[in-house]
Image 1 (cartoon, rainbow, N blue to C red):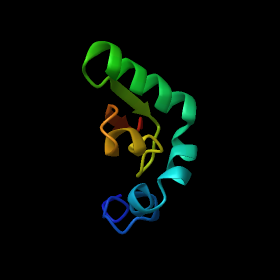
Image 2: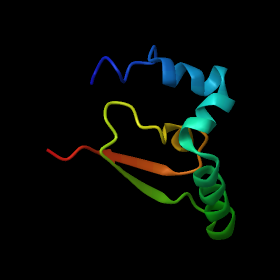
Image 3: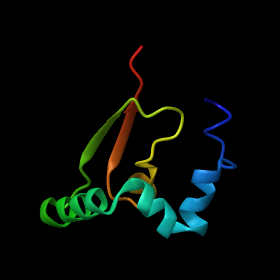
Image 4: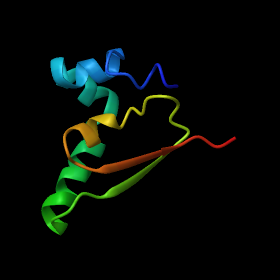
Length: 75
């Protein structure tokens, strides 16, 4: 997992280079919901990403300051 978390991971690189593809991976509905929550409540929502693996597909939300994403992997 440590290797995957380095900035050379393809998904993390694409967050800044190809945001549209990363938005598709995250999901437009989720992005819209988080942005709406932030506008209505004046803060980012907390999102629990269960079973995410080494890189969360919801990293787009954290990268664009739309949510606080906490990832866990159950054993």
